[in-house]
Length: 581
Image (cartoon, one colour):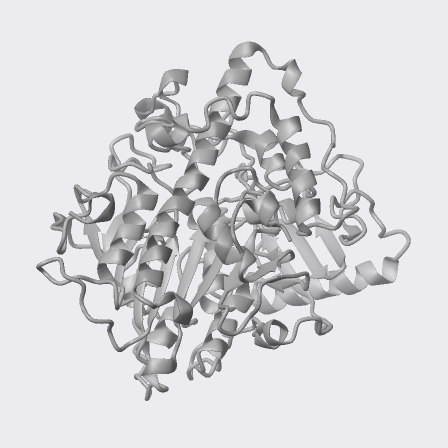
């Protein structure tokens, strides 16, 4: 047996065919189905490997290197030794972010103008709202595969489950993929949401749907790392369990965690390690994280904490405080487990001499999840899904975080997940868009904090640029509109090029031209007396509280024009309902 109980050799799975100065603070030492012809590979021995790590619904302050109290020593070492981005924006929810990440284009261009689960009736069937990766775009994996990279995915996909949209058809040589947005983190295969109480989560291996998970699947973060350890060039073993010689081809590995996405679940021992840690409540946690973030320099020294009116911890009764504290304990355990298992992979790469030549990119796909599993969510628009969830889960305090449970951690903890921002996942405020992100590649970039605004669609062209692959899209495919960050990474301190970026999801709109940001939050989310559009200077006002549209009407008009142009060019269809997100 190998580390963490994995058996040598491939596992057998029953299948059914699918459709076609801060070390003290941190505590660490410093393609549709279209075919793209393979082109001649650059000099193989010198090409770097790529490890792209994506967390699911993690707040900006949830890593130690970004201000958290949760022990994340493995990711912290990479972050502090790399380039930490303090103004990295993703989309406000998972699948649109993942589409932009892998294609370098805006979500509607890639087919994810809205999440498949959230499509409004007037969006169904419209171009850009396919709910899965469109054949108009080519993925980063496909581009790298065509130049000789070994490409692997382990974890969440959420970009479609048709044969043409699965990872096996979009550039991945091998993949173990959860096709939907969420599921139980244990081996029971309970989906996070489904209309039937007997439905199973949609897991696929190399394009084939799994009827059950392998015996070695004990917890999501553990298995996703195991899958890569079994298959990465230079780490894979032969049938006798012996390490194979380092393979010639470099690899691109997407390690796509489902942690800490709801339902919040973690192994017993992991939860127990945080017992009592959050009994003081969310106000205390927010202030602690805010202080650490300022000391670390990942927010401005004068950035105010988000102390907008909210339910006081002291206003809860004893039972409510116990349940809320337990939810946060589980959440922290999920973050810690994600870090622990990532550490196993990083250690293996280091032990085999591969880490030095591996570009590691880490990010969360959106801000912290602040929605609440209350009497209305998601019953208002999805009553069958709510009934199925209620029928098959145990909501008792004793079972919180264990198999069969269903736990959210709610808006108050999410606020502590991004202490200087407003709102959370689902909103284009900084709390929904700004995420922890870093790149680690000491061979080329020294450790530093980078404050230039960057965007999730910049990742694909940057990685292609780094490994010497022409980022120009193949004929017939939409060109990437993200910007390579290589000049910024190579020469810090350069003034950023002027750019305007638009984010729209669930009918909520942000138009960003840093430091300016125009925001449109429709009813019922905005106050009745609030203006349809507001303008903020997010440098001076990161909480987006002081509307400057009256003082700068022309600046607002310029950003509104950019929105109208974006909507017309991309065929944006604003939803005609409020789904709950």
